[in-house]
Length: 247
Image (tube, rainbow, N blue to C red; front, side, top):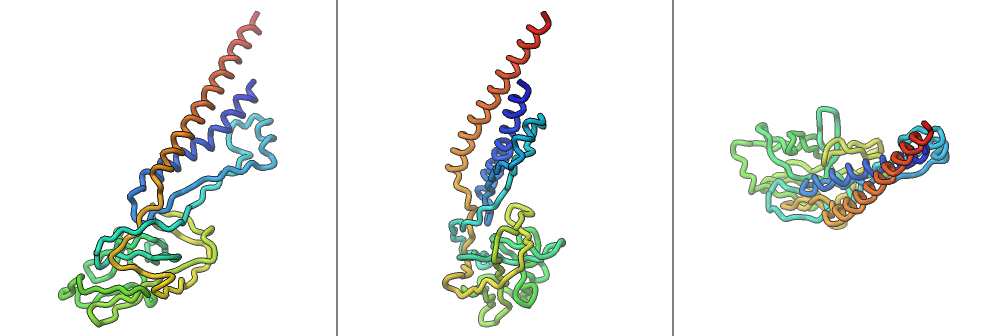
């Protein structure tokens, strides 16, 4: 009887993790550049052994959390410092812990004229941080960012945005809602202004499909409730068995 309870409990734990992931996806449905998370559960060869040993947890089940890097839709902001990457690639930013990567191109200017993220991290160009001269006379409406990532003020070239890509995205890990680190070697994305391009005045929206996530949450919640009822029924049967054993 206890084996049945442990088996049922082990089956509920991945569902709890999946519900947490869905809730986080929905919470970031309006977060610029956010990439939804998904989870895969793979039964290992020793899964039954874990149950037989009454472990009562997820040992024997491989829970893999992955990021869905599908491109989100673009929203037009007309902001001169807003940028979106069409196609593969990530903007590169300098954080206190080193280089990180993002699809969130909602940039602004720091007091010293650097192009920075909402968190204040410097946006890197091919030759270092993008630095605007003459901040006291700069008019942001004069900033022009080309499809190849060149940043200009009027006719003066300020720098070129560094857009990175990777042979495999499997090595990328989230550090926040829209920032990533990578264990894979960084490649130049080959921004050509056509197949892969930087779009000024646009932002990439979250790739979360709210309706799909809600449907999955409802389905998962019902399955979880069914599992709970099974455990309650098994627990009730166990209590009755123990009462009979007293006589």
